[in-house]
Image (cartoon, rainbow, N blue to C red; front, top):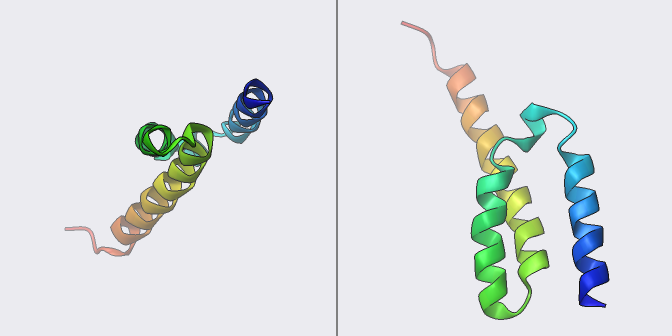
Length: 71
């Protein structure tokens, strides 16, 4: 069962990397989330959550940089 969940999570992750802009922040977040989730016994769920949070912060950073006036 655990192997099936891992394969399903990897398949969803690969399809989510279709565009480079969407992957920004995901890999770093997935690594951190996967390690934290592994410590709690839920590595795949932690990696998926970390990916989502990493993308959110990367998008937030990009929006903040676009709103700053250029010098």
